Structure formats: C-alpha cells, structure tokens
Amino acid sequence: FTPAGIADALVDPRHERTMLFAVPTMFHRIAEAAEHDAKLCEALRRPRLLVSGSAGLSVREHERIQTLTGRGVHERYGLTETLINCAVPSSHACMPGYVGPPLPGVELKLVDEQRQEIGARDDQTIGEVVVRSAAVFAGYLNRDDATAAVLYDEGWFYTGDLATRTAEGAIRILGRRSTDLIKTGGYRVGAGEIEGCLLEHPSVREVAVVGIADDDLGQRIAAFVVLRSGEDEDIAALTSFVAERLSPHKRPRDIRFIAELPRNAMGKVQKKLLGG
Image (cartoon, rainbow, N blue to C red; front, side):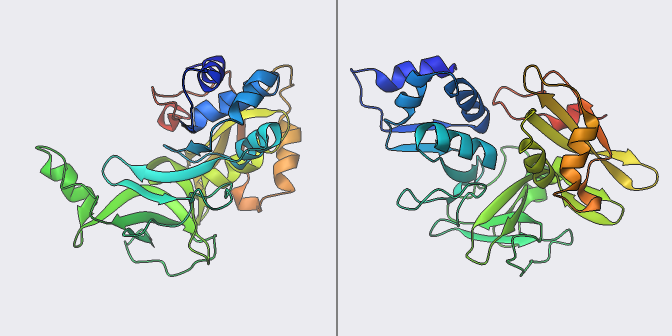
C-alpha cells in the first residue's frame, strides 16, 4: 500500500472506483501524504464513499481528510466472529469518533467487569461490547475452551472491545479491554480518550497510551509519542497541554518519545510491546 498507489487506482480511466475501504493506519498515511499532494486530494473526491474499519479512526484524521478533500469518512465496526455490528449509514453525515448505531438485527449491550449490563447512555460510562445476531459465529474449530471464554449466555459474544454509548445509541470504540482499560488510583480510564487529546497537539504525529504496573497506583498512565518531523521533545509542553483538557487522574505520568509505534501486518498498534 502507498498513498500514490491509491491515487493512481482512483483515477484509472479503465475503472470507476465508487468506494475506498481502508484501515485507520492507511487513512493516517493518506492524510499525511495528501497535505502535500493535490493529485491525491482530487482522487479522494471521486469515490462515492470513504469507509474505515478494523479499529477506531481518530477524530483528528477525520478532520484532516475532511479539510483536505471535502469528504468525510464513514466508520463501521465488526469482528471476524460477528461480521459487521455497527455502521454509520451512507445516507447520514459522518460521525467523527463514532462507529454509528447497531445494524438492524444486531443486539448490542455494554457490560461491566461483572458482566452486568450498563444502562447509562451518557457517552462517558465505559463497558465491554457484547453482541448477538444471526451472524455471530458457532465457535472456534477444535477450541472449545476459547469458544467458552467469549460465547455464552444464550448466544451473546463478548468482544473484548471497550466502548461508550450516546443517548441516541451511537457507539464510540475506545480500544481493547486487555490493553486499553487502565486502572489507576481507583479510577477506570480509557486509553483512547487520552490518545485523542494528545493527537490534538500540533507536534504529535502518533501516540499510544498504556498502563504500566505501579506499586502506588496499580497502573500509571504512560504515553508513547511519535513527533512530527522537526519537532522538539518537549515533555513540559505536552504535560501542560493535557492538563488544560483532562482531569488529573487521566493525565499521563510518563511521556516517552519513540521513532515509531510497533504495528502488526494489519497496521494495528501492538501495545503489549510497549512499556513492558
């Protein structure tokens, strides 16, 4: 994948490309390139729909692409085991930061750590996404133990993903329960909110927030930051920036600068490789 290759494919006169599906890492790289590539900006205006999946697309990337191309990105949310669970309808305006409401036929609820349903729809209360539909898989082949860990209670599938829900039913994915729920000083904090805040700083190119074992707090919040080219490693500036926007218990105790974030073949950040 290259942004230039995307541009070439979208303007190829032999084919009419009506949709562009990409993962957030691809959209990030597309946005980076589009800031200096008028051809790419023009090419991105051609498809009827730009769609992101696989992981949450940051609000900043939404806004960058919207500013550069005049086009928004519609998000969807699904897993191999469930197919698509939520989507922002193509007939609706994009919802930066949200993957839309559940699709017709999909039952979705948020549950707490005791697997009790969370009734709050305040876009603040964090829970694990649990879904049930005709598309949910029957189980993992020859892995009854793995199946039993995620699929029970009359067909409900426990995704391991963390989210909040608005009063209107829109879902905001915050990350994985195993890596993105930080328990610090008696609080439960979603890493995604902190990452979104840091990404608003003009010097920050990418960021990953994790919880690191701490004798006092249980976990302390650490931010691994990739800076834009030519920017200085200024911890004080980032600390001050976050302090103006987040409650004290959500602020990183550690800020570390790295050259790049570790990713897998799908472009997803491998947080377990950070802060060990």
